[in-house]
Image 1 (cartoon, each protein chain N blue to C red):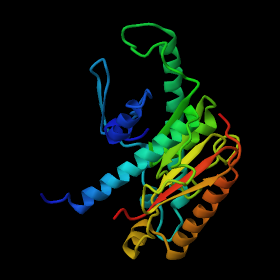
Image 2 (image 1 turned 180 degrees about the horizontal axis):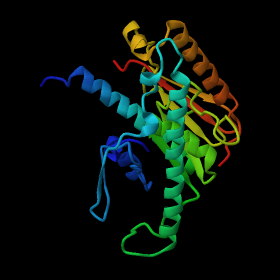
Image 3 (image 1 turned 60 degrees about the vertical axis):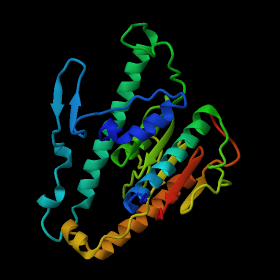
Amino acid sequence: MQGAPRENMTARNVLVVVNDYMRAFFDHSLRAKPSDLLDGSALSFRNVEVKQYGVRSVDRF
Amino acid sequence: MNSSSAAYTTQIENLVSHGYVVASLEPRPDPVVVSFANTQILPFAADPRKAHDRQRAAPGTFWWDGAIDNALAHEKSLAADLSFVLDALGVVNRESTQDAPFSQRLDLSKVGAFGHSDGGTAAAFACQLDRRISACLSEDGWTPRGPTPQVAFDTAPSRPFMWINLPVAPPDNEQLAYLHLARNDSDGMARRSEMLARRQLDSSQNKAYRVTYGSQT
């Protein structure tokens, strides 16, 4: 079976990245769930860089 | 926010499958068509605020600021739409009707907003304008005045904020000609925008994240 066209693979990867970070962000911000995606310890995605700004030591929910 | 709800299908499904309730806005005039419950159908209508200033500007004049003001005005109106929907959800949540299956089940103390492009900037605005919104996510919401341009009481995100953005290549000569922009103006705009983005995120009163993705090969 042939693989999906490269364009589709790219779009799918972007969707996965956006979906995973979106939910990690809302889970963390609205449900106080920790996320290794947000603290930068996850190595799930190549070519993705996460920078954290602002208050680093105190969560304000 | 912005565009058709269908454009957000995978994100909405993701959130809903993990227990979130998602209200997707289709404010005119952005979606191709809006279908109301009373069978009224509103087709796409060009937003006069988006009238292309470039076409009205004389060659050699710097038209871009006017276009930015128009875009930001549009995005602020989207943020106001979001507040209107929150008001409506509050009413629905207090009532118990068969038409509102989630009534009395919405936790409106934990509200997040997200959107793409104009919708992303609108989400950033919404977090500044409406204190009921606790977290905002902007997907490729780019403006030459940074991802969270000043709208109300501060420029920095005061709520948890995430900016997911794909670095955009500088415009080529053909694009510059179309935009009536000189290379120096374009480069300067990009530098100022990046500087403002870092300043706004750095001075955030809460956690702010920037997720940058490059080529997905």
